Image 1 (cartoon, rainbow, N blue to C red):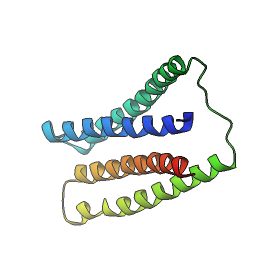
Image 2: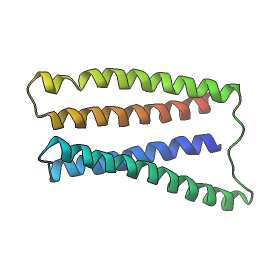
Image 3: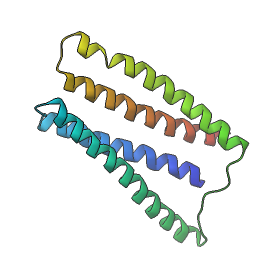
Length: 141
């Protein structure tokens, strides 16, 4: 696998792990206010960023050891740009649809905290779709 494929795998793994943590926290200890939910999700965003950085460093070290040569990112070429654009297109569709869906809980009179969770989940899912799309497009050429 190339560096960009490993990067997509790490992004998917980070979104799944942190997404599961957010769901667990929302179910086991519901926040009392919108501010508490927003603070919890800001921490989740920070943890996703830190997780991805640490996981990429560890992955690079492990793959370098396994290959017995330095494992580094290649220069982006036209194919990389096309794959990135296709992945972003797919993620944009998911983010747009789920962004609109996140308005339904407000329209139906639910607590605004539910809307924040739906919006956050939609954006996390869009990130997973982007990374999964890149992984698929790199694999199929």
